Image 1 (cartoon, one colour):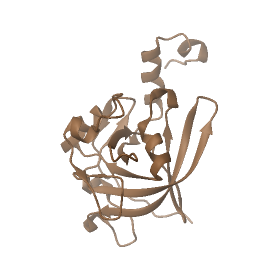
Image 2 (cartoon, one colour):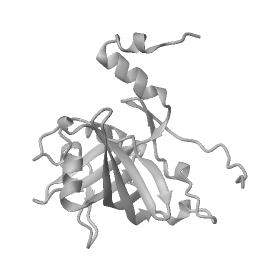
Image 3 (cartoon, rainbow, N blue to C red):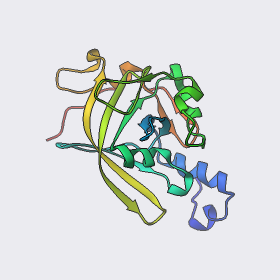
Image 4 (cartoon, rainbow, N blue to C red):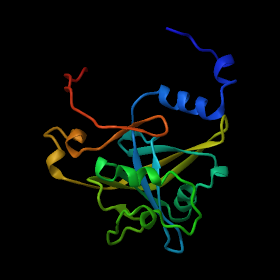
Length: 202
């Protein structure tokens, strides 16, 4: 085995370093975040930094890139206060990945990549119609991370839409039965398979 130090990766080519560091943390959930601006233009973008923060209250966070990367997602969340998170399945994986591009604000990524918007009465931002697990969040807090100019965005869970068959008796969601995919690095995707549930340690 080989050991690497900062003197190694600090001198690597930018893209090589990004692939290496991004894939180091291992498999992550990957989702599409749906937003809408005040003019009614929808936006859709892929994120692999979504994390559970707490269950009571139900809080979920994600890391947003620096604003210099033209984040329409964060701008729309700031404007409207709401956004959706939608699981990705292999049936529309290519379209989901295509939303990672940097497009002008006037571009509706749903239309661009060929994914259908799903609007629910009383809810402003769109869901991804093809997603089997999707939920609505209300913006709560934006925490700047000064170390690299990113932001931790925290939202409160407001609605959940999924197939009841994946809910076990104790509330556990059988995500593997829905066919949700995982990711690693910037462009690698994986299917998931169930191994087992261990007895809860108290």
